[in-house]
Image (cartoon, rainbow, N blue to C red):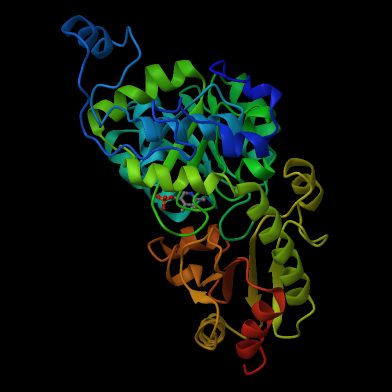
Length: 403
Ligand SMILES: *Cc1c(COP(=O)(O)O)cnc(C)c1O
């Protein structure tokens, strides 16, 4: 019983409920929540070895915790990576990655339709410390390749993107990165390992906002980087130790339990999302629908190949309007007419969350950056939850039919 099964022999659904650190001496079936900031050491010599990294064992809460380790082992198994290092939020995972891999004079290539805070962090905050960056069109492989320079150390992609669900070719980007001696990192927040495993397509690092589908019920903030043991030990752990973006044990425990239902949630929410996308596409007040599961999506074939034949759970759409001002007013009318769904900028919840990206998640961007990301005033993002589909469409119809 003490011999752990090899994760490679087990299906994702099994790993999602089983991977964790050893049970304690009490034999608890559900993984324990260890709330402790420090650890008692068995001897001074063992303590010295643990601090030197020569022996396994917990030393201090900023560096590690058994509940946090269970979450990291489970997520690493789902992504098929050797190791994982969790963080307090998705953004702090990106910060940890950049602090661990980049120095002044290095260059990063990202898509111009990345998550708004990611663009801000890499394009503005890191620029203060001398890190250069280029932002290219998400789906244009040639543009990614052309942006690579001798000092390029990292390509960072997010697919599908928020909020337009643009899909990039992970394998093609991995080839570009590796030919340049750089690493490819993929933000796998939207698809999750239930639908897409970037490591199997050549990515070196998978970044997560655990706040979204991994928790899945909108309760806590969390983040993580999945990568080789070498990257985690040599590049990320030193940043965690000195900068302290540590995931709290309670939050780790919540996300750990969230992972147990990841597969069935993603499937059910994606089924709802496809039905909603088809309903919106047929609606006369709707200008355009963005959903990788629709045949009308520009990267539909790539998405189906890369995402387990599934479009995911986020649908965006534009309301019909004559100009940006009217578009904004109409989008606001649809949002303010809802009685069931939540007006909320979060995503990855069992509750359907509806948002206006141009005035929220992308509100801090300049107008030029916002246009480059394709976020118009009439755009509405729906992160589809588990409500009955007819109740979801009825709630959106309330506004769409009274424009
Ligand atoms: C939310 C989000 C993030 C940031 O994660 P936080 O947990 O909010 O810090 C990064 N990337 C994507 C795609 C996201 O949706």
